[in-house]
Image 1 (cartoon, helix red, strand yellow):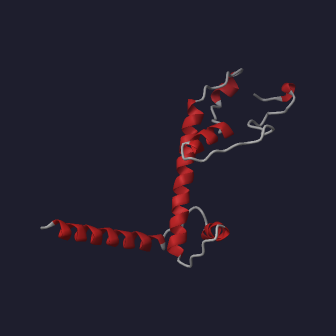
Image 2 (image 1 turned 45 degrees about the vertical axis):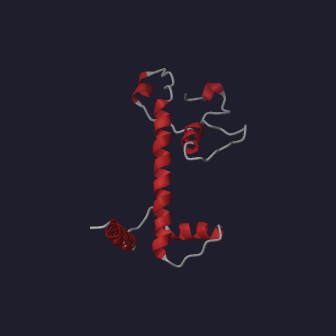
Image 3 (image 1 turned 120 degrees about the horizontal axis):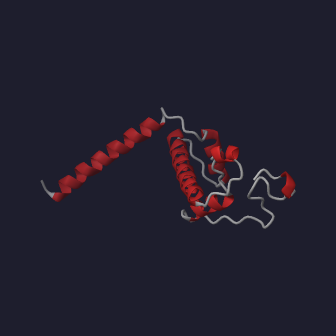
Amino acid sequence: MNHGQQSGEAKHEDDAALTEFLASLMDYTPTIPDDLVEHYLAKSGFQCPDVRLIRLVAVATQKFVADVASDALQHCKARPAPVVKDKKQQKDKRLVLTMEDLSKALREYGVNVKHPEYFADSPSTGMDPATRDE
């Protein structure tokens, strides 16, 4: 078999796989609704009547959000845990995703997030120290 024939067969297989994937998007309901994707695509100046393409964008967006959330969780877990005062709080080991965790994760994808100086990164920010639960 020569190189040209192999290349043609590989292209045909790729085309078949792409066609099958696009067809499968018709049966898939992404987490992000089609209307929302269409809205933001239209807002950016893109119009497309093909539902498969809308769903492809939704799936790509869903993957991006999941990757960012996963990376932010890793940053959250890597952060030193606060000192716990009582045993009840010690049992409750909920992780709190902060804007800093999210910013670090997004920065890895080339998205720089800046928040204003008055941004409250903690539910107790700005509260009277006597009423804080921390």
